[in-house]
Length: 272
Image 1 (cartoon, helix red, strand yellow):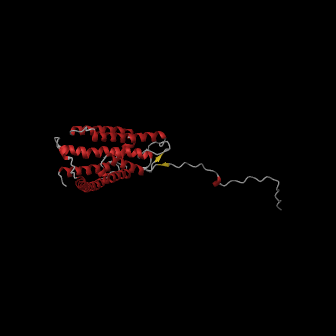
Image 2: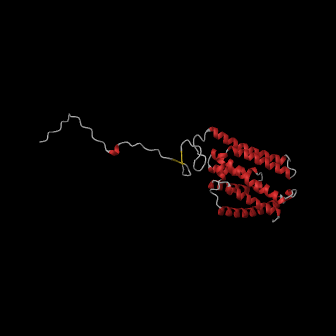
């Protein structure tokens, strides 16, 4: 006969289930937007090379620095325009080329301040030849349409037929110097400036959408051609979106070159 349990005796400890034993959890890896694993103290992604946005990255020091870069370059562009417009410093092609050289050197200087974020933009990784050809054909068609509309507006509104070929006829090779000045230089240095470090500077202060709009408006305004704003702003927005989508400047550089080259040929042969 079993004896009744004594309620005064201590109850022996019951063994815990295995699943109740706390297991240390491994920290989840931090993933960058490209999908690569990064450390919390990385400033740049070791896989794609892009700058990593963090609280440190958005510190007041970096914000102030980027703001000074943005305002500094735009102030230079404005002073350069004032000098060309009112300083009467361009009397012959040699003066014009001197201005281009100064502009190129200052652009390179400002771009060097953000060289680490600029270098990935010159990668050919996201560049496809078929895409380049398609964008080039669109640039040719767009240049024909815009030059035709601009010619009509200048003639009908201002009774002016503005051409730049006569200016380059003072040189030994008008076509070559015109292409270098109007097609090659803007494609290389304006894309570097506005879709490059100016875009990056605004992006560090805000976001991609703001970078697209601000860099595009600054690009259009700095040309100081009110009549051309109707196409300068859309052109800049397209180039900025291509830079954002493919993380490269090559598409913007190609369409900028082809667009201006077509304009040079239209002007040189006086097609309209």
